[in-house]
Length: 202
Figure: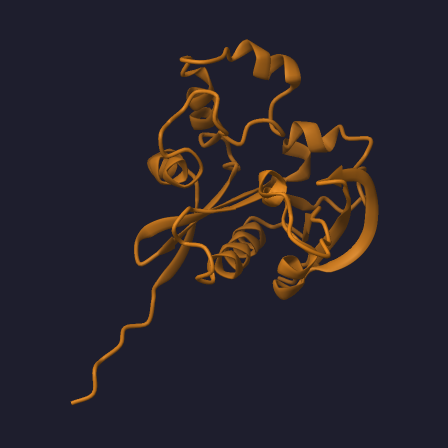
């Protein structure tokens, strides 16, 4: 008899308090205080400073608090029940640093949702996670009434500095149905950040 193969099961869910540990597994598995908790765009510089440094757990608590908002700070994608990807997405108006940015001003008056970070868990790269993650993030935004989703990736000609890979690439977002609608004055890895949008239909 031929071997039976099982199709992988993909799911994407918002990071509510009950899923915080899954989010941490992707972005900060060792729970390091000064490692990334995906806070820099959502809090002011002064608020970040107040959270303290090495050994402090205030950053983790601040990240947990974001999950209790009406709109959690993003979504986690699961492969066969295992958390494998994180996408920071919510209304642009709720992303403090982006909403105040002079380098990445609003494209127009559409109340877009914005993607500011995409992370694939170590050990799960090159397995199609990003596509499922972006599709799941867009579906979540649509379910919450978002008229459109924007992102600000770069268009690298070669290898990209991994420390800035969280912004994503043009090709990655094009595969997810986004189109370039402008160029910003912001840069990542010395490359201009684009504005890409996917308009949603009800």
